[in-house]
Length: 222
Image (cartoon, rainbow, N blue to C red; front, side, top):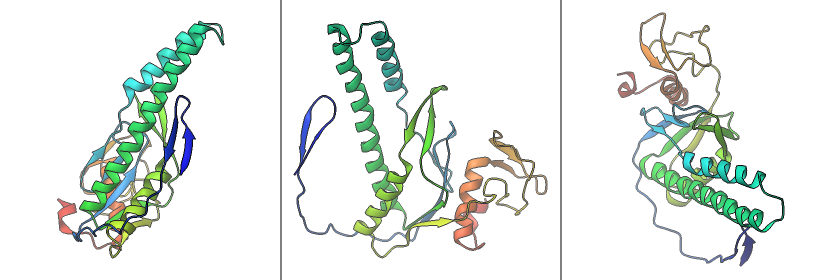
């Protein structure tokens, strides 16, 4: 049993041994994923899916309560009341994030046998509401993916990694490297083949392409 305190309440967590869960069926599906820190989606896939984690309301309320606290004398009755209110918002945001990670990782493992990322991952800032941002625990997200693959699909390839060099600047359609592409450019036209590319979707396809050693399935070229 583990006892922990979240700033408002004490909780007891129990570890219970159970039988190994039933394995999920293999789907022979695979996907490349590009990690971002912009409004285009923090996770963009080679299937053109974009993941967003929206806690803008929570962030605004945290900012609002902090502003109210700054006008109070520290340690006063009203300050202590606002401190509890602030902790509740922090806890709510944390719980939403944990729930989001658990559901997303399970759904990805259920749908795909292989999920490919670039090697240079650690933590990222997800931009929310312009100037508001929060730290997303990317390393924990990757770890939960690995844990679930081991638990539910032990025979699959699971989480794989490729080198990140030029994944955004290489046209997945013709292979041309656009060395003039700027970081802030989200959509660009390939100078060689004329293909209009979403920067992040293009990167995700290239990530998957590298895992295939250049043998990209036809469905990703359409």
